[in-house]
Length: 111
Image (cartoon, rainbow, N blue to C red; front, side, top):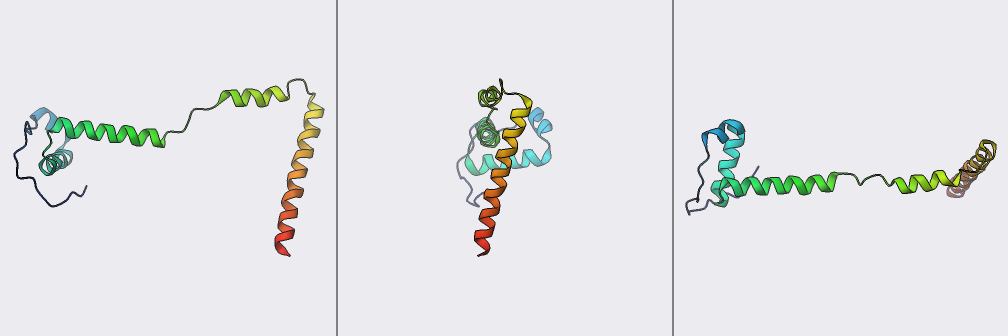
């Protein structure tokens, strides 16, 4: 983590890390936390709260939206009263139409 080299001149309020927290975080994370506290002048609670908020925001942006089961149900409902033979024939026609459309595009691009 890179921070600006400008150090704050004001003393930190409540900027003391407990021995238990230091032991739980480990040496590298404790050093990073102390560096951020020194550069920002924020207490450890505020820095950790900000870190949790940033992780929460990032997780929400990465998470996929839930499955829309309603759309799946509507797709299944379309074939509810159709025999397997009719369904197979319809799907075959759709697939052939798509391939014909695709072949038409590639032939027109070649010309």
